Amino acid sequence: KRMFRDDNKETGDNGANDEEESDDDEYDDLLDEDPELEAIRERRIREMREAQAKQAENIARGHGQYRTITQDEFLPECTGGSEYIAVHFFHNEFERCKILDHHLKIIAPLHTTCKFVR
Image (cartoon, rainbow, N blue to C red; front, side):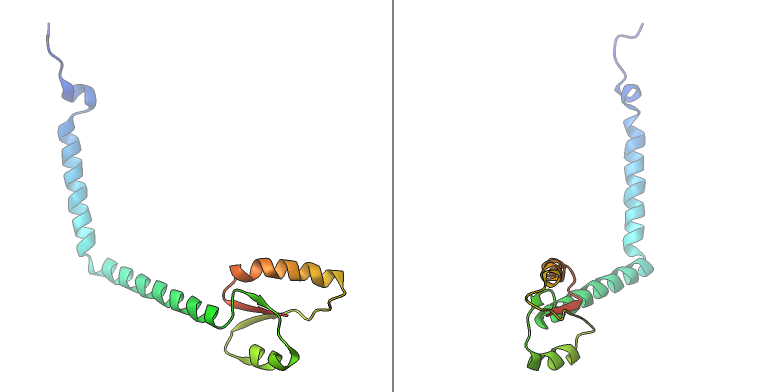
């Protein structure tokens, strides 16, 4: 009878795991050197930077907040450079206007591509 224990048989042969890790490392190296993947990665980074710049520009224009404007400010605000504008024509005494105001205050920060004014 055998007096010692064979660890490789009980754990699943560690030699095969080392070989698999080596193959994975080689595959990762090939992916890092692939010019097509590098082009896709660079394009995606550029798109993300452009989206971040666009969001910062929109926030500077007043997007992402719900503001009250005067009648004189209406035309410049609505014809400025914003692509999307939501205007709420309200009356202080109407209950439905108060309800809509409440909901617009909630959604305005979530939609920075749109300017919300009343």
